[in-house]
Length: 254
Image 1: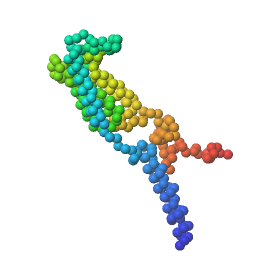
Image 2 (image 1 turned 30 degrees about the vertical axis):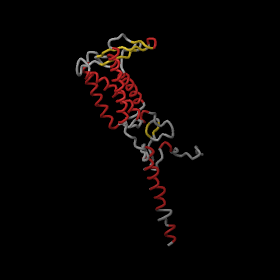
Image 3 (image 1 turned 90 degrees about the horizontal axis):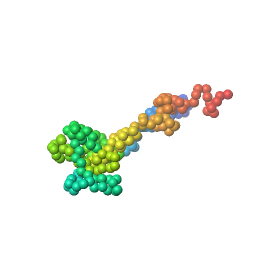
Image 4 (image 1 turned 45 degrees about the horizontal axis):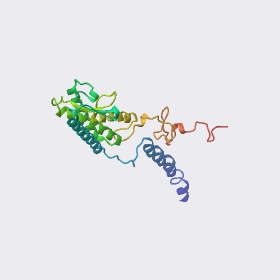
């Protein structure tokens, strides 16, 4: 009985031990299966779920809209019948200019078209906000939304009428078109959007790793090399990490 149980290998040497440790469970669970999924394909069970950033987006947009509206109201009330006010030795000039075009007085004959574009942009940002979990993108879209709604309010409620209203611009810098707070928010948001997209940062807060050079070192979690994806062998090791046939552990054969 002892010979059958101990030496035949059903439990220790020939059967279960070989399957469980070397060929079966350990190979599948540690190297080929679970570890491959969790370390190589980027899945993290302990990765926290990022909160939605819709509230931050709306808060920034509301702040930009309020500041833009307040400054335009004050400027129209105090500077409409006055000469431009020069500050900082002429570096900054405050004047009232009614603009029928886009930001920085672009396209002055397309007021209705820019109004419809602004409406489309606002709707698009609000729809996108449902899957927004990135803090930088929330700030970026908040700037764009606040700027778009600020100028849209002028086009809807100022003279000469709805969809044709003139936007109030009042900030003038040397060698630069007159603009307002909403214009500044739109430009800043646009620059941030380009930078975030260039860095591969997605709306959900993750980063597109394909924009980086994969396989720059042995610690590359994707298992990729500079020449493309590395293949895995049945025992879970990377094919290019295995020693060449005929080579010994020391490096050369004799």
